[in-house]
Length: 165
Image (cartoon, rainbow, N blue to C red; front, side, top):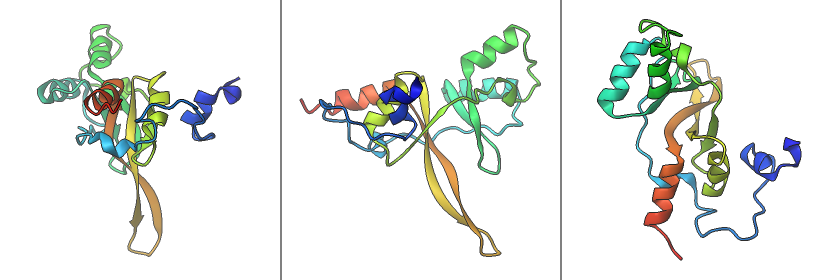
């Protein structure tokens, strides 16, 4: 049934948006949101240290990214705290035990309309930028870099500050 759902098809890049009455901001690129660089946690960070870092830096969530650059998921302060308090994880466990591995990605060149479709079902999207990396032997590959984390509040703030109606 999701294949006949236009919002799912748009979110997953199978269909360009065909909304007839688009708001003024619909086709603006995600890069215009001017997101701040995210706080990134490495997978070996303990749950206790993750809680301390998130509280100290004033973040509710942070992407967990391996040294290789592979995006493993997102850790939230509330899920980490509740998991520790419920006894599901120990303070000393790696943060990967409380990492959400189901998340949506969006590129800097994607539209705010696509972002809007993602945020209808997800609390956040990880903004990624693809970058060519070359090794010493001449081989090259595309690597996704985390550029930011975007929430519905970021989109709403942008729209309300720049309202063109």
